[in-house]
Image (cartoon, rainbow, N blue to C red; front, side, top):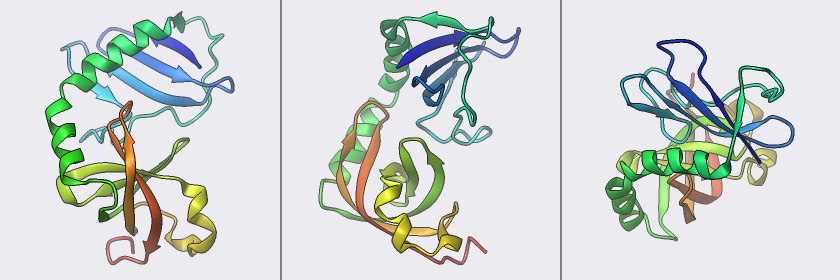
Length: 172
């Protein structure tokens, strides 16, 4: 993985990226000028799940390569603000719990699921269910059931297994 920093222009904050060798972003965080954060692991009311949609060319002059340590410091400072909530989610959703929710977005990591209980974010391996799911249902807002398999501490996501997607009245 590579770690980048970008300060696009005044008023747009400082952007940090974790990218793979193909330039695909796996984590992204913005520290806005007022000190607030927008990060790829949580839904933001205005920016949804903010993650670069196309490969990042790290040779562009406006990107500065930074160390993994610098990126992780920014990321962990942000995560710390949610530690209590994350602890409550893990206690409320132990491994083996059946959950319901809906598809939020498809990321390089897999499918992010909005879990109704506790408004948690779940991560499901898209490859494990896409072949047995009607293609018209592989879109945001389609309902999902799954079983809690574990926890992604780096993103504070609930890892899901045995995912099933259903037609849903909200999806149209």
